[in-house]
Image 1 (cartoon, rainbow, N blue to C red):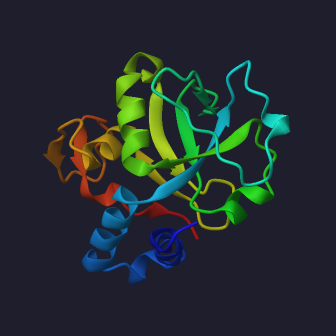
Image 2 (image 1 turned 180 degrees about the horizontal axis):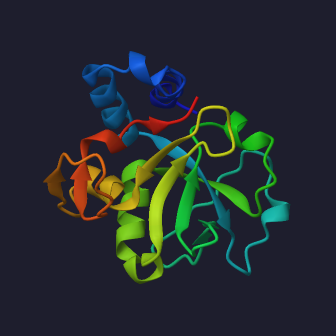
Length: 172
């Protein structure tokens, strides 16, 4: 999709022990400027089927679209976002992909806070070989929408604390 996202994917594929502070800072900066492909349910009345391939729909502020959320057994919700088409191609995700800048997504999620009381995190490229996760409030903090209290306790799970170990939680 764009060069920012190609570099994000490169960093996500690295072994955790190879991630230096500089790489983590670069990753966070790249995330802030990323464009994500986000599964959405399209508003009624829009005839998606008549669109040509690669045709773009423009949504205005009054557009009603619903970002697809994933939910676990405890009722926690997650927003799946993808850095490129390949990460989505093999998935059976309902709806359609909406391309949205990371900051616009943060603002949209912040503005619809009432719908996000059970929101736990943003999942980047879930169901792929190199997924990553960022806490919901940490994601909002990237764009100065919330301010979290600094915390260095690795066992702390308070979502209102900023944990330095959260920016690179990805599995290999």
